[in-house]
Amino acid sequence: QVQLQESGPGLVKPSDTLSLTCAVSDYSITSSNWWGWIRQPPGKGLEWIGYIHYSGSTYYNPSLKSRVTMSVDTSKNQFSLKVNSVTAVDTAVYYCARKPSGNLYSFDLWGQGTMVTVSS
Amino acid sequence: DIQMTQSPSSLSASVGDRVTITCRASQDISNSLAWFRHQPGKAPKSLIYAASTLQSGVPSKFSGSGSGTDFTLTISSLQPEDFATYYCQQYNSYPLTFGGGTKVEIK
Image (cartoon, rainbow over all chains, first blue to last red; front, side, top):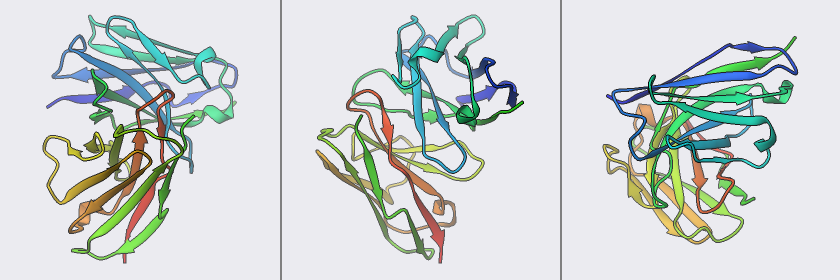
């Protein structure tokens, strides 16, 4: 069955760059979908970070846009997130998710999430 | 940004109960509303999109309704796996935004 799995360092130092990857299994990342990232700080709500199409088109949350970069690696069937200049407020569980193309749809499949702590 | 307000923030119920959760948008979002169930430590699960359409494989005990600014999620008969946190999310305009969640606990 189709699965999404996040991976990356669980601890990042302040001012460094947070880098995460989402591996997609049993489904081609070049299918007509958008691939997104959502995060949830401890004790807080969900925040949409952005999403990317395999063609490279992106939509980012304006609140994070200046620090976020997303990319797709079709050879590895995975997509990635980078957040630079991190601070403690970037501590969160980070989820990757799939969104079918078309205005009718939202995220239909999520990864389990990975906890990232920003601390020295 | 569109603010999504869920109520209640938590509720207690028993297995077999019917529960209803509401979600209000700060402006008209048409029917661009999704519902998710999140059990601790698991991947969030998509339940409903377009306000009332069940995702493939989701049992019919879940139903959604509403349009514009007011929406509801109803679970007709709670089962153990339904004790979780539920979120609504609007995708009518960017940035996409989520409600604060409704935690459904066992009474």
